[in-house]
Length: 176
Image (cartoon, rainbow, N blue to C red):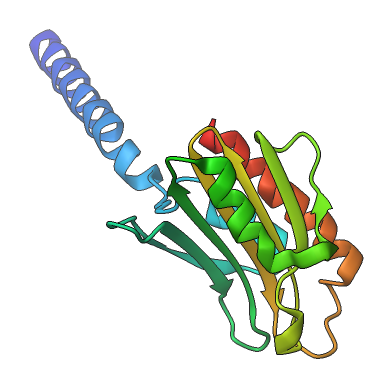
């Protein structure tokens, strides 16, 4: 009877060890969350546009910048956040060229990267949105948060200014 008890304990310890080994090996795969955008997570983007969003990432190729796009998951409203990042030999000149889209309405985003500005995304299209253009060392970024909804309950002009600042802060921080 004593051998059976010892044998049962040995089997129980072996099975316990195997189960812990499988748990440790399988856990990282089960807990892995896909984040294809290197500068912002889907959760952060969802918070910035005010609804659950899904993201996509297109890596840079040749002259084309890398682009992350986060769009509203349920297409009842059309909110989106787009981030474009490129490497430029003269990042100040490139940022200045991109910021010309803001015209004289550009506001300065203090303490964001080496320099950054913001303005209305595209007032000619009749959409509500904000754009930020900035640079961190040799990288130039453009961020646009916009909505196509006419009566937007969440993304008011003041709220957009606050959220474009937060987005620029996150992206610039991740570019350092």
